Length: 235
Image 1 (cartoon, rainbow, N blue to C red):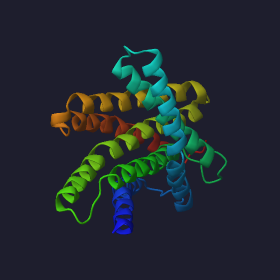
Image 2: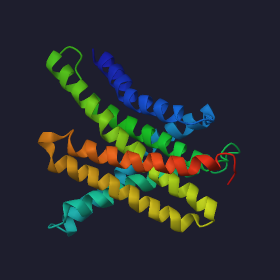
Image 3: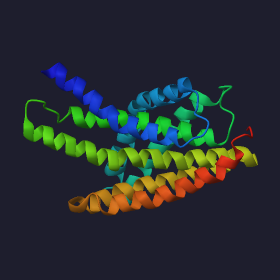
Image 4: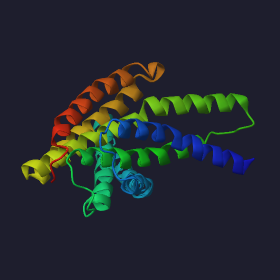
């Protein structure tokens, strides 16, 4: 039973990210090389542990040295660590790949690594509560899965897409560092605001955070539209 619970936790943890990955890739006229998409997705798996370690050290340090810390600032710092690590993982994976040519690909690879990152989060959360033999816990697990699909998994995809857009924009205008900083700050703000809304409106979880994500998704779709005409141009 333990092995079955673990296997089902893995399957259910992967499912939300896989659905979003297919959704985003379907929107692209020139599908990215499957090998590179898989590599970035897999990289997202492995960067969760160092990210969690750095976040834990920073969170404990802030709580120790700044007892009256502001919760939003804490969320902002922790979110910045995640967005930075996701970018570094994507950069390390694709920067020297010959197939990494078109500006819009930066957004797709960032989304791919973000969904890999979210998958490990989903698996840890579901595995900690999943029990196939208990109907009540099983119901709660599927509820958690639905919230992860609508909320946290989608958030990771959107925030990383923002970083990907500014990464591409930096390449186009030959000012990668400065433009990327803007992207990381914006993505971090989106991430931190979402987490703050979840904490603030716990009893109405799906209302305000979801509306916020839907609003951000319009901006991300607009970013895709800006880069799509440049699809045949190379970095």
